[in-house]
Image (cartoon, rainbow over all chains, first blue to last red; front, side, top):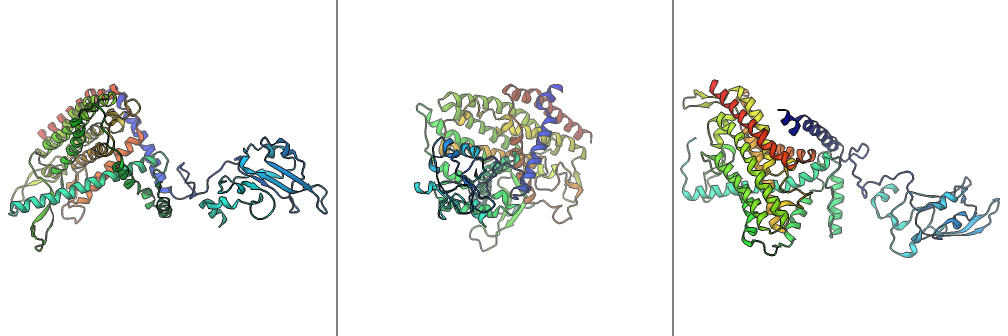
Length: 171
Length: 397
């Protein structure tokens, strides 16, 4: 009898069946309610992917309180960039003590997303945002800057907006 | 029940119709079970299982996936997402190349999956899905007008023996397939399955003897009626015999014994020695591909349905509502619950199939010596004791 209980372990089997049965019914009830998911499956194209706060996506420029670019053209990011994808041309603006970039070119095709530029920045003017759908159809689409509405480092890349997650975010 | 006089042609045509219905039922339940296996295993492990179908036809499958996603917001329908998989599975198996290894025993190799599949499907020929007539064909039907369609294909008086006999023939398919492949892994898988399945035949047959002893019959229809606890009446309505309520105990134990042996007979998860993925590649069907492989697959799932059918027929009260012979507490005058119903039977079969998948998703495999020890050292004495208990209760009461 002891051998039977040690080999067939009915108690442990019942415990395991209870656990998995509990899982089944929890998942069955909450399978498609996004607010309270009990399952670990990520349904990426339909549901926006959940990213960790320190996820390193695309380089993104920030604005200061006055609505201008927060960048002061200290060139720290240009110097530290291992692949040399950032080019800054400094300029002046009326009523602003520091310099302001007239061009800030970012060639994303060679960027390795190491975040050194963000770490080196003393003015909190650039971050790596959470945008990771960076595919594009033309090589030119990877050259980002601050001019124009397309290829703008202040917003989303238009080419990358094909997924449902982005479309839902825009709504 | 007086049989209506039917000509030979009419009998044959009716039997053919019944065969088509039953085979259609089994052959649709098999792919649905594979689909359910994906989904239920996923849900048991906090995954979602199959939710979308990827494929070259981006437009079609993409639209399908969007539709499935939209449909999934309804609470119950959500489990049906990924349903196209069951078409995709079959299509994949149809399109695969059918290879035969060099120097394999060609005839045996080609015949083995057919033996497995045929044996598992043949068992359904004596299963009584419904006692009596399902419906009578109207008079305008050409050959079979006014003929009744009964719920049993062959109502023979040694149904259980026929069933166990045919089910053991299925082992030949596995053993021969493993031997004919001319490869070491299938051979080992075949040998293991020979040992395992022959061992588990013994407690399986002994646990099926319990209902035989209780009901005193081998006919499927009579057994299910007696085992549901209903009294046997003679012509004048006098109660001839009735199953004692105490027989509930051996039936209850026998159910679990039978289910355990059934898991082993169908090579399901806690006992999947013939198909040990982590040591024998894929066991006996390593060298099989295409439709021949799918026949083995079909045989495995059809065997699951066989075990579920027999367990629900003999232990869970078959087409009556209450299991373990408690049905006589509901008088037959109550409209739906007191009457036999095909849906009760199907519901029991499907919930037992769920149990199969549930156990697979929960239990890890036994070691090989443990599998054998469970069969010979524990299940066999337990089955004999259970048989003795049933016989004692029947003799004393």
